Amino acid sequence: MGISDKNRVIIFDTTLRDGEQALQQSLTAKQKLQIALCLEQLGVDVIEAGFPISSPGDLQSVREIGRTIKNSTICGLSRALDKDIDACRDALHETDHYRIHTFIATSDVHVKDKLKKGFDDVVEMAVRAVKRARNYTDDVEFSCEDAGRTPIDHLCRMVENAIKAGATTINIPDTVGYTLPYEFGSIIKTLFNRVPNIDQAVISVHCHNDLGMATANSLSAVMEGARQIECTVNGLGERAGNTSLEEVVMAMKLREQYMHGVYTNIVTENIARASQVVSGITNEPVPSHKAIVGSNAFAHSSGIHQDGVLKNKSTYEILTPQSVGFKENNMHMTARSGRHMIKAVLEKLGYRENSYNLDDVYSRFLKLADRKGQVFDYDLEALLFLSHEQEEE
Ligand code: KIV
Ligand code: ZN
Image (cartoon, rainbow, N blue to C red):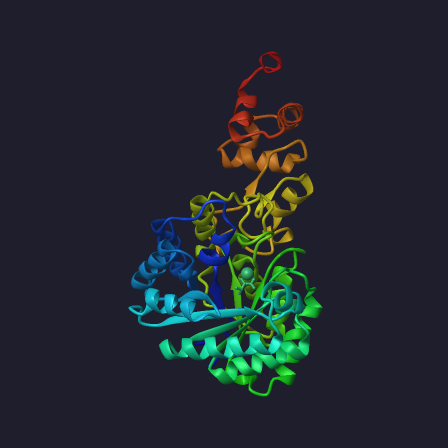
């Protein structure tokens, strides 16, 4: 998948694995299946359904997802250990087409202090893991954990060996969200320049958001030739989260020309629903200012902005709310709203301009907004019918 079309960026969703592992309470198999169905409708290419060795419940849930989902590849995560890879196979062998994703850390601090090994041992373990996984499926992904902090010579050597061993996707994670966009893009560029067999695998990226760079780093990698992005709905994930699916997908769609014409198969009109389903099931609220899916992402509050949008939406909207599945934008009526906005709301509610005095209504609206913070349609209607005395009460 993906290698044949050089402009297609594969969307690998890890909401159910990296996203779920960040929750305070793990999800039930039923909840995970509901999310998987939603991801399938969204057009996600690969769903990382879980980490089967981690618990019998997780293994069973990956199995159920593999049995049910037909239009996305289902993937299970494993460390570079035989028992983990075998657990992935146990979970997925009934699935028509599945992926085993195996990983090992490659940065000095992880290799020495966490794994307590030398780099040569780690390469050997990776090669063995990839070969074992290839006995079970021809779709094997290998990740160099903490690639963002791995010396580039080591990274090149590991990638070359993993591809030689049979990995069909090579994933470059910025596990701790440490790199900057230019730096991360340069890592991908160097891999393309220095690894002789790089063309035999899809290059993937997996960024964390510790410095708020996950989206920018992923896009920078795509500009340098990466063709799979690992991401989660609402950016859910360890610590500050993972690359947010909705952000990278909409950025590539909107700025396609700048991004060398890359595209994804995501049905963008299903994004809002996916966001709401994931937020509801995981009990993780979406911040109102979250890009693309926050409740304020298509809301306008200041008089100047509202006036602009009433004249031409593209003054302050770079995307239509409908393109990501919201019905319409919304305008907040606050003390920052202008007369034009109040007139437009009254018109929408069915009041003709000659049936009220706009100057009067607007000055009363401002007083109310100062007192109340936000004014709603019903407040505005009440203002039309209340006398000044009643309003003071
Ligand atoms: O962040 C990371 O490095 C991971 C790997 C397991 C891909 O989640
Ligand atoms: Zn991760």
